[in-house]
Structure formats: structure tokens, C-alpha cells
Image (cartoon, rainbow, N blue to C red; front, side, top):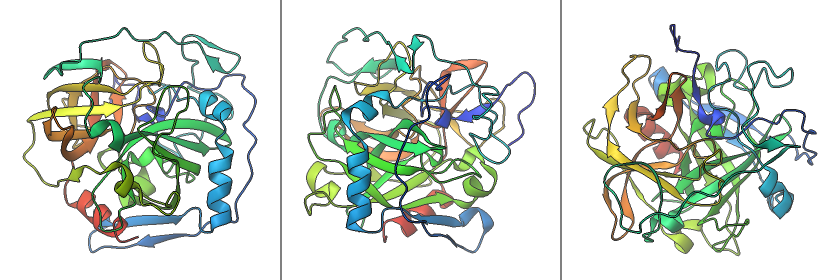
Amino acid sequence: MTLSTPLLTGVPLVAGLMGPALIGAMPVQHHHAAPAITKPIVHTAKRMEVVEHVAARTPAEQRRVLDYWTPARMADALPIDMLGIVTKGNGLLNNLADKTGITAAPGLTGGKAKLPTPRLQSARPQTTTSGSRWLTGGAVTRTTGRVFLTVGGIDFVCSASTVQSASRDLVVTAGHCVKDGTGEWAANWQFVPGYRTGGGHPYGQYAARRMFVTGPWAHSADDSYDMGMVALTTADSQHVTDVVGAQRIAFNVPRGGQTFGFGYPADPPYNGEHLVYCAGRLRGDPYKQTRDQGLGCDMTAGSSGGPWLSGFDPATGIGEITSLSSFKYSDDQRTMYGPYFGDAAKALFDTAQRA
């Protein structure tokens, strides 16, 4: 999309909600798997196109991904400033090498973030909040997790959720947490459901085996289609949804309405170690730059790709995924925007769940 003054950019939270930028940090060293296969899956309409990428194809490649994410690497994986990246061009990170438009997050020293711990909040769920710790429990604490990935040799973090699917291996996240817009696909992609403080993975770690994004995201980084789905490997021969359960997914639901958004924000005042939620009524994009809906939410980098649940029951922690955390406008950091799950999202899901 083309952003008009006074907007700087509506960056996907690769920007996001993937994490603070690494200014002056050493490039992350990592091993390279065999070249992956990428192929388009074309539907009748251009916006219905689904683009696929084969990630960890063999048990050896899958093991390499899981071994890559040592506790130290997971702790050092940082998001990119969500408001300082030009999203168009060759990719979301095409300016990273010369640091154009990149700013260090507050408290970033020597490549490590010194972040305050958010204050504890009431366990009683709120129907309206711009950002609170989720202390109520329920299925959402297992189905939501952190994503760890590498783009351009640098490690990042995002959020994601399991979703009910035919394969029992599917998670939904933001497109920019899977593919760098028109640029490269993410490597070393791992999902940790029910992430625990300090890098804990009580329900296992799952590498990506196949990745899917919408055609508009892959070809033009269109924020209205910033959606990604990833088919995971099994862990100890178990499918992820058999271990942690899954949220339902719904398409073409009426706009507006009450929604709960979840994720693992990592920029201050958050530290990426806790599940956080926002809740409130959705509203349209006031700038008319996207088809997205906005939710009052101060979650920061790291929460990108976290699920937005409609019809959410706080007692059980179950709802229907109808969107996800995608981007914020530079002049309104209090509103998170998420893509509308319409026909393009359904085409993405229908393809990915059969992987």
C-alpha cells in the first residue's frame, strides 16, 4: 500500500512485532540447510494465490533447527522496531545492512535488552484493556506460543497460535513472521507453544516443514494480506495439536465486535517472557490504507502474529481466530491492526491444512 503524509509507515511487525533492531550487534552465525524449494500455488484470483516454501524437509534438517535454538540464542533473539522500517522495495529488511531507518530499542546494550518486568495484574479477565498479563489460564496459554526465526542472518521473535486443521500440525501467524515481504523466507523457524519464562518449552519445540503466505504478501508486501501459516514437524512423534489443543478459525465474519488479542511482546514495558492480551471492540482503518481492523493495544515488538480471538470464553480460553497482530501506524502506537480473514485467508488455510 502507499502511505500518505503524515504517516511514516504501517510496518508489519516484522517490525514487530518481530523485535528491537540489532545496532552494532555481531551477525548471528548459523548453519545452512540444503536449498529449499519454493513454488506458487495459484488460485483463480490473484489475491487468492498461495505461495509455498518447503523448509525442514528431512529429520536431519529438523534436528538442526531445534539444535540451533540454544537457550542463549532464544534469549538474544530480538524484535525489530515496528515503526522504523520502510516496508516496500526488495523486502522488509532490505535496509538492515546499512541501518537505514533502524533505531535501537530503549535499554538495548551490547545486543542484549535490559527490560523491566511488567507489573502483576488481576487474574480476572478484562473485556477492555490495552495490554495486561494473562493470568486466567485456560487453553489459550497452551495454544499460543513464541516463534523463533532467522532472517538475513539475524534472529527474531514473533508469536503464533495452533489452529484446528486436518493435519493437526498447523499454526497461524503474520506473513512477515514467515517471509520478509517480497524478500527472503525465514530460516531456522521454530514454534514453542505455551512458552515459559527463561526459554521453557513444556509442550515441546516444533520446527517448520512447510510455510505458506498469501500471494499479495509475497509479491507486494500488501499489509491487508499479512498472513502466514506453517505446517510443523512432530515432536516425539506427536502432532502439536494433539499435545496442546487448537483454536478454531473463522472467515468472513461480520466486521467489528469484541476481540481478545494475545501475544508475547518483547519491547518495554514488556520483556517477552509472559503471555499478554488486549481486549476491546474492533474498528476500521481510519486512514483507509488497508482493509484491516484496529484494536486498542499497546503490545510491542514480539507480539506479531499473535491470534485475535472472537467469541472468546475467558473461562475456557477458547475462541475463534479471526485476525492477528500485524502492524501499527507511526502516529498511533496505541492501536494494533490486523488483516481481515476473508476469502484469501480461507484459501491460505485450505491449502496449508492439507500440507
